[in-house]
Length: 129
Image (cartoon, rainbow, N blue to C red; front, side, top):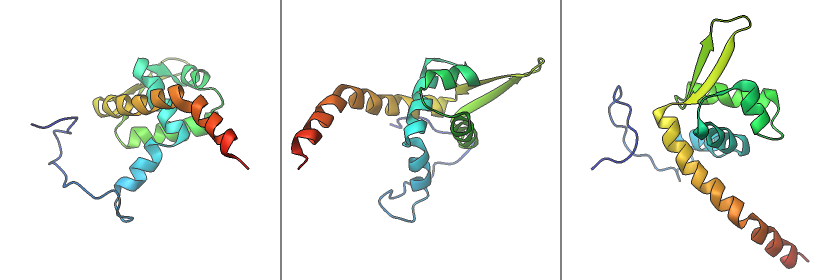
């Protein structure tokens, strides 16, 4: 039984060893698990958002970092970018089916971090010399 998203346009790719330094999945993993990547994809789980609403939802992210990450995720097929022909143009970002799948996985990580961050910081401060 197959589990997860599969792009019907492409044949199934052979599974790669992400522990191998030459594995191309390392680049994808780096983008997905960056601080901003996790927050952007998790924020888009709630539904389509316009650029400034997304920026305001993610405290501390610059427009440049948001723009770069959205461009990357659009290029990876994780985010759809829709431009409304208005003046000025309205741009909306939404997760693709594959983006929804990875956002759910990353949201689990984000939830775990939210629950355990205080205990980790406390442990760290107690164990510092």
